[in-house]
Image (cartoon, rainbow, N blue to C red; front, side):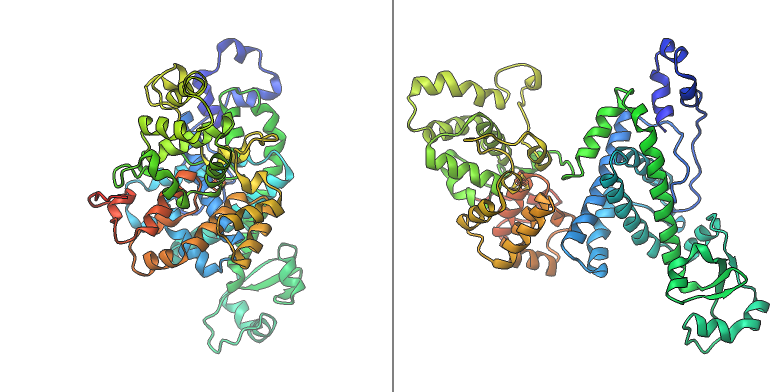
Length: 508
Ligand code: SF4
């Protein structure tokens, strides 16, 4: 895939001086693959052509699915709850149609699945910790899909695997039936069951649990064990593939187009990146003014509540705090004029002249009214995502920007949460636990869910919102809008959350 993607852009001179050991990349043969099965063991790297945008976008989409899976695990969801939660997530980001579906996008979906797996395999092969985490989540994803594959298609997929197992013939079954049933704990009274045989070394766990019949070095395994065998084999193959990818990784550093993308993706394991969407603004359903920010701040996530509290306490915020907060306010729908009013009133200890000379320009710059670079199209900067806030350099003394779940010590974090009204002991205990595991955005989502428990139950029970509107929050502006809408249920309609239906005005 990489050779194919890079090939049209490789400088001819550079190709000539390529180290002989790297020529395999320069002379790669590429071709589109056929995707006969819905499921994939990802043993063959993709060799077709895709654009750099697809390379990154597909990687991000897969990452979202893996992150949601990890979030389910962190929240101790049962397999049934995980499956229910993941269905719309997979449908939205990594749909995979069966052969029966006749979906015209089917091949493209499988291609995306294949390429995105390999993109992330490269991105997460750098350290043992990343490899382990990636292999665990990919195995879970594989299992989830495999268990819900169409029965016939699953059988065909299993047959296609190079797993060197053989179905026990009817003659052999007759010969050993009683022994087979006894050894594999089968209570089935009929003869309809099936077994297959495999080298005993391939199934050490089953041998250890005494759940196979052993004969001449072969283990006779009941068909019900097949899923776990396939899943284990997937995991083993992936783990050794990741070791191999790690050895090739230094070569990727030479590619100045792929290396930054891979770096960005690997960073996204802290919290997947989420772009800001203008739909996160509530400007079309409530009039937002400088005067309404105090009231609206109850819907703010902790990072922004913290800045708001500091601002009110000291009538001042340092540069990065102002930047983070201004962009957030802009994202919720506060227009430039009102934003200037907001800061002017908030900095009440500062004289007009000083405000104009030291602060005004930056506010206008953030809105794109002045300045060049990012403001070329006059839109200014976009609000920061959780990923950005969780991965930027931590604030130094006196600064309050960033994500408090990461920047505060656990004890100070709990105190801060109590100050903003989170008192449930169970929630605070979970926050401590998540933060201890560096699952900062999961801790934040836990607080959100506790604060909106009743409303979330209502939208779920009455199917008021699509399930995808309740996925893990990855952006402070998403936190705000979701909180605002949940606390105003009945006053705003589903169309207001950017799904469908008309938008309704409401006063604040
Ligand atoms: Fe803000 Fe995101 Fe941190 Fe929550 S996880 S406090 S929304 S940066």
